Structures are given as structure tokens and as C-alpha cells.
Length: 160
Image (cartoon, rainbow, N blue to C red; front, side, top):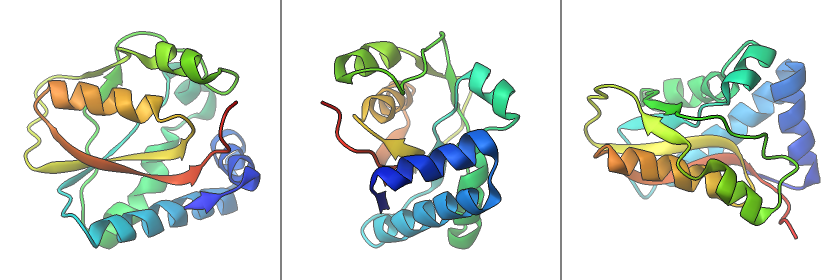
């Protein structure tokens, strides 16, 4: 896991500017975090946190899915994508702690018949307050999916 203000710049370089070297750093950080997680738990599926539809259109890709593919391949753990946004959410970058929690509360839903059996692990690029990961876990658990944890590429500097 990458710890520092540089982490946010690397992730932005990967997400917004499609810098291949930044993609590789984020992917390696996720792979490293997953390797550590797997020493303690078995994981049947990786579930990347989906980006907002507007972000996907602007970037031309589901960033976190792409950077999770290497970890999926190395550890032979399939990626599943049952989560979707059921309503619009704001970009979290300029929001304070409580605003982030309010922004994503009830935002995710599990679409259709997921057919996921076993344990799943959430994957995201950056954790700041944990609001997005918590909301994703809530939606998955509501659909009867066993969430055993989450790994991220980076930990943001704490919000004040």
C-alpha cells in the first residue's frame, strides 16, 4: 500500500491522465496488499468498486477494474462486477468527512442475479474515510454476499 501525498498524485495520474507507469504502480500496490490479505484469508472473488458513470465516460474506462486484472491473474481469483450505482453521487474529492458518508449512503445496489458463492474482497484505489467501501459492503451484504474485507492501493492523508 502506498502511504503519502504522492499516492494521490499517482492515482490521479493513472485515473485521469492514463499514465501507464502510474497504472502499473497502482496495480502493484493492489497486488501487494492482496498478497498480504491472502496470508490470512481465502478469497473467492474480487469486486472492484465501480466508478461513477460520468467518470467512466470521461476516462473511457472502469479504472479500478483494469488495474485489478493483474492481481486477479497472479492469484487466480476472478473479478466480479455485481455493484452498480442506483443514484448519482458527487465526486468525493472536495468533500469533508460527513459529506462523503452522506454522499454515498444508499448509492450502491447489486444488479440482477449475481450467483456469487463464497467470500468476496472489495478492491479500490484509495481509501480516505472508508465511506465508499462501507457502502459497497452494505449493498453486497444486503444481497446475501459475504464480504470479508477490502484492499486498496493507497491510504489518503486524513481529512480534517
